[in-house]
Length: 153
Image (cartoon, rainbow, N blue to C red):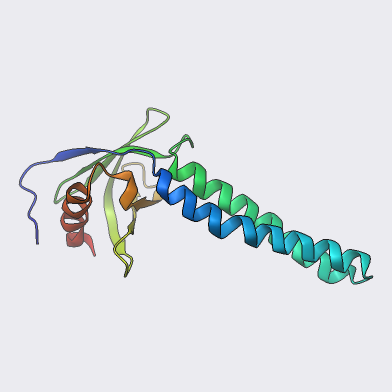
């Protein structure tokens, strides 16, 4: 395990390769659900059409949110990450600085390509973030941050 004696700021970048995979996942899903909704609408099964249209819209909005988050275009998207043993400090795109200090939890995926971070900031507001491997400068920086965050698992 990597120990963090001092803080080290990691600037995040846009994950363009991850966007390609998201597009390959969300575009066929949204298209298939939308086409199914139209087929059932004209087949006189409006109840099923409403359900499929709702699911199509849900996955569309979820996909847009995920892509904009990877591109760091949302105002609440982190653009830098500073990890120490006591807290995690993030600078957001809108200029706000968030310091997670209480109930800090780290969640890693099994593939090792992303991790989640949740905790309460100084104002008592619960915050949740997902970081992807492609957002870090290189694999060493990703492993360094995820290793430092394992203290909070």
